Image 1 (tube, rainbow, N blue to C red):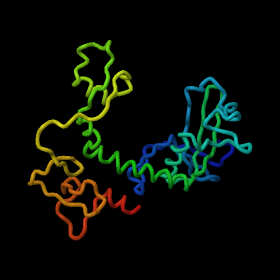
Image 2 (tube, rainbow, N blue to C red; image 1 turned 180 degrees about the horizontal axis):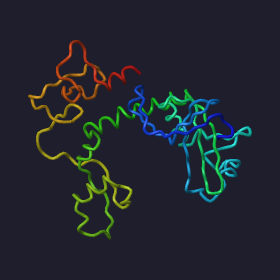
Image 3 (cartoon, helix red, strand yellow; image 1 turned 180 degrees about the vertical axis):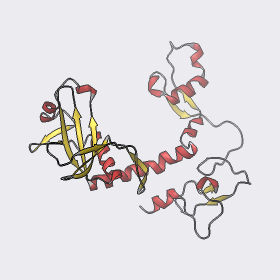
Image 4 (spheres, rainbow, N blue to C red; image 1 turned 60 degrees about the horizontal axis):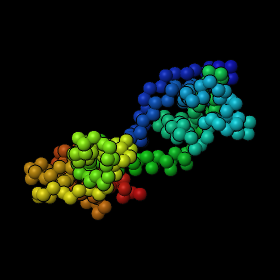
Length: 253
């Protein structure tokens, strides 16, 4: 690289956070800089499965994440690495990424440009996943709480230990890792235990204690509706119409 570029340098990167996308983060392997091509990011891959092979030969035959196209090396757009480096370029505001593939026999590199339309489409999908899944789980364990619902056991391996046939054991174990117990089929939820029904509110999914101040989201599409002021970062009820962050995003689509 130094032979083909003027004043070529590689600097350490660290974690990058872009204020425009605060829910994403990127940590490329390095930042490259030269007088002829400007600033780019660097990502290095050393696939264990091809460590003793020639990545150049694999690239020419289409058996690697790096492929040969019109006599030049580039990356397969359907590969996971392509998604990764496109996000890295978007977060770091760089237009190019030097992707290096290294094996014990040789190495190859490709200069990959930023694909704005690809990023726009796929970042929206990731953003939706963040707001609908990651954020509620991080703030209030919204989805983890769902496992409190007991499940029936339809079939149990007859050779299983009698002590393991207790439904309490299987309820917890199979819900956590159903693939590890192929002889046990988890079906419909059991009937709720007797007792008064509980209405849960806010991101924290707790009952109304009639003391903690709450505020209602006025979006007709809000599935939570009532929030504790402290859970949404408020100290008092604001003037005018209040819409929660999730509905602001969803309603703008």
